[in-house]
Image (cartoon, rainbow, N blue to C red; front, side, top):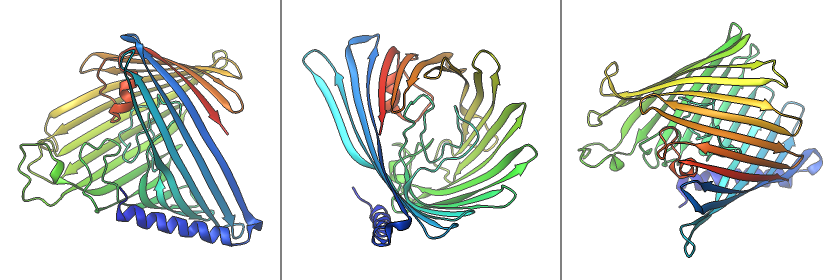
Length: 386
């Protein structure tokens, strides 16, 4: 269903596109490209019940330069996807949809940009376990690196000393995103910002975000009759440095202003490193440690989770690479394992993924995709870029 926000933003973006097309084409560049991917997943528990799927993401972009310093961009892409699961020899469960994937317009100069529309907003230093996964759901295991966007206005300014400031406003994004468990109140405005500046041989940033939670979808049994909305404030501090090895951290604090919620405070911290060893063609190693806790009081105890993650990548040749990711759940004593062999041509990419995981995932907020990697099995994915 189209919301008033999405309709307004789409109208604004289409207006920008019309302005671009009616002007002289002498300084315009057009690009039409796309991604087509097909995959099959087989679980050892149900070898005769494979899951098949496909993605097709066509993308159209246009850019017009007004001078050496100013330009106007437009980007539009769709996500057409379908899946088929063989429940038995006589029954096949199918599902499919075509939806808007990205649609934004951008005005930019050498030090400033304003981007309006359905877009991806992500930031932070961590890569495997990200407390700052506020607006996206990028999964490091996904060869396609797909994630839904948000309807937003994003402003960014870059200072001469490499510091930068972000300011954003979101509207019309009532579905949960990132780590959210509770939906945003419909037709409410979200806003926030981020300031990042160099510190020594690296950089640090402070980030803030505010939204209103919809009390009508709180868990049954909670008395929320007197609440029209629940304010939520998020604060974050992150930094990254390159001192022989790469070091980083992310720390977030979230507070929902309601006495009715069992755990209105949420805290998350990740620390990580990366280093490339001079072995053969170069072995890259990334490690992260993540802890999350929700509680009734700021400094109280409550529900928690604790994960470690290790990623290794080794280029076997010009065409081939081998990578693996391991997660360990310290609370439940579960190990998650992913191994990916990739062959890359000019337009074709072949991935063969093996996985050995618990039946129930605790890592990411994307249960439909997580179920593909539950248990033990193999996935073959072929990607064509045009």
